[in-house]
Each structure stands twice: as C-alpha cells, then as structure tokens.
Length: 139
Image 1 (tube, helix red, strand yellow):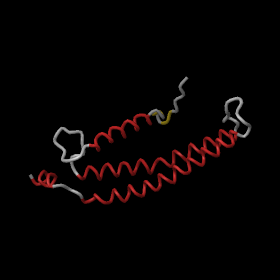
Image 2 (cartoon, one colour; image 1 turned 120 degrees about the vertical axis):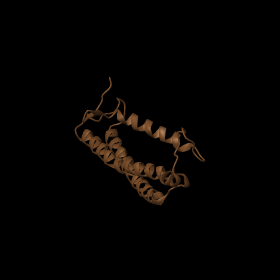
Image 3 (tube, helix red, strand yellow; image 1 turned 180 degrees about the vertical axis):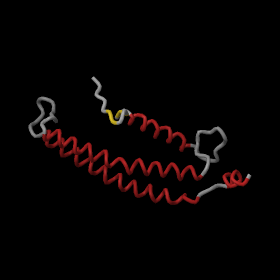
C-alpha cells in the first residue's frame, strides 16, 4: 500500500521530480569549457547567477519542511502512533523520536550555513557578463 500526501492538488511525490531536476542540473553543470549552441550546458555567466539564486531559494525553504517533520514525529510519538518492531527494547520510540529530532535540527543548522554560503556565492556573479552576451546585446 502506498500512502500519498496531497497538498493543493500536488503530491509529496513531487520530491522525486525535484530530485530529478537536481540530477538534470548536475548534468548541465558538469560540462566545462565554452558551451556551443545546442549543448546542454550553462552558456552564459548570468545563467550561473540564476542557478545560484534558485538553489539558495530551495535551501532557504527546506528548514521549514524539516521542522514540520520534526513536530509531526513528536506528535506521533506523544499520541502513541510511533511504534517499533516487536522485540525492540522498551523506550525505543523515545530514543527514535529524540534521535530524529536531533538529526533534523543538525540538518536545519547545516542548511542555514549552506544558505548563507549560497547567498554570498549568488552575489558574486551579479554583474557577470561575457563578451558573447555583450555582442548579442549590441548586435
């Protein structure tokens, strides 16, 4: 049985699409050297600016989701919904809930560090251009 959470007509399964989008971005950004027409690559320095801005936005939004997952797990634990396999020592749900919360809090802190770094990286190419974009703009 598959349980699918739905919000605004969209599903949590969209995370798979987001993961695939990052995979695609990995392919686009692995190409090095000057891009040629038709290449799946970043062709102009301003594109790097746009990519960094989008990545910063993604990283900025993730902590809210992780915090909400933490609260959901805590609520499930408090409501007795969170259980463990038979034969597992008593108190394991407490440990599981605390451990998940601890790890998610660490992830939120790491994401904030990443967000700040991406924000700074995003500012760097803000005025970037290239000789080719200048020619296109003039020509």
